[in-house]
Structures are given as structure tokens and as C-alpha cells.
Image (cartoon, rainbow, N blue to C red):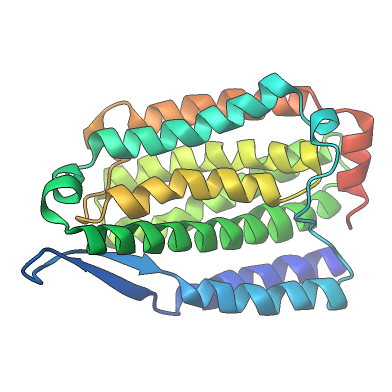
Amino acid sequence: MKKITLLVVTGIVIWLTALIPNIGVYISDSNANPIGVIDVPVGELVMLTGYLLVVKYGFKIKFNYQIRRLSAAVKPIFWRHYMILGLVGVSLNAIFSKSLTNLFQVIPTGQLGLAIFASFLGAAVVGLFEETMTRGGLFIALVGLFKATKRPILNAALLSSLLFGLLHLTNVSVQSVPDTIAQVIYATAFGFAMSMLYVKTGSLLLPVVVHAIVDWGDFFFNVSGEPTLTIRTGMGPLNIFILSTIIGYQGYKSLNEVERKRMMDKI
């Protein structure tokens, strides 16, 4: 019952948060003409605070945002792969963004600083919220529901990652259907990679950091409103999908009994 309740509560929080409008930070040129807008999801931060209190005191579950004995939990090559994933995401956003001209030729210095600050804030909030909801609440609840199966962690990671990918269907209102489908696919693979990073480290901190790095490119380089990781840009979504799949698979295959038990004992 506890597992199902956590699943339902997490779903409700995600749904309610989607109804809260973001705060738009408008970026202008030297003549005060608007160039683009960076959405800062303050509502996610408010809802997340309440959710964490409910999970901690109502469900007695700690997601853990600390890193202990990192070198023992994650092999150096495995850790480097996650950093590569984050850097690839940022690089692809920069390479394919039509807003690069705006950033370096149109936006005045003061506005550029505002864009950097707002994009970091937005990416950090999104990374924290989405990782807590999906790798935290959904994943842990599903691990509990799949405990009787042969591969509970794998099953929970796959399903929670699929749900994470499907959440991006809401973006169809701001982009084309093919682009949205592509986003659902590579977001699902990315979610699986983040799930394995959570299991490997026992902490949500690194998934939040990697997620924020990838999303920062969307916030900052897309100030002109042009989505970058789309099928029109060619290899962007495919690269993220392939790299995430490889890292996720490698992470699962390298899990040891201590890491598995630690995750199973969370609920």
C-alpha cells in the first residue's frame, strides 16, 4: 500500500506542478527590443519543497542528495562517461542553436549576464525537480512494486524512465510531433542512465548535476526560442540516445550486491 500511495502522490505532484505557470525572464537587445525569454519554473521549487517534507515525514523515505565514497561507488571511467554525456548535451545545443549570433552580437553585456544567471537557475530547478520526482519517487515506488520479480531494479528503471520520457509529450504544444516523439525516445534513454547513476552512488546529487548540465544548454543557447535537440538538427537526439543507452547498460551490468540492496531497502 505504501508503494502505491507514493506512486500516486508523486504523480499528483507532477500533474499539479504542470499547471503552475513559469516566471519568464525576458532578454532584450540594446534598444530594449525583446529577443527571447528564459522560463524559470519557480513553481517546481515550491512543490518540490512540500513533496520532500511529505516523503520524509509521511513515508519515512530519504532520497539522499549527498555523495559518500564516490571513488568506491563509481569507477573513474564510469564517472567520466556521465560527464561526457552532460558535455555532449551542452555542445549539441551550442552547435545547433540559431541564437549564437544573438548571444555574441545582439545581446548587451548586462542582458547576457542575466541570461546566464536565469538559465543556470532554471536548469538547476528542473534538474532537481525532475530527478527527485522520477528517479526518486517513481523509481523507488516501482522498485518496491517489482520486488517479487527477478530483476526489480531493471524493471523499475525501465518503466520509470519510460514514464519520464512520456512526460515530454506535453512539449507537443511548442514543437512539432516528430520532434516531440524524438524527445520522448532520447529522454527515456537518458532517464535510464540517470537511474543507474542513482543506484550506483546511492544519491540523487549526481543525476541532478548531470541533468542540469544537459538542460542548461536548452535554457541558455535557446534564448531565441529555437529548440536545438530536434530531428532537424540531425545527430543531436541520436547521439544522446546512443550515449545514454550505453552508459545505462554499463551501469546496470556493473551493479554489485551492496548497491542493489541499498536501493531495495529504500522502501
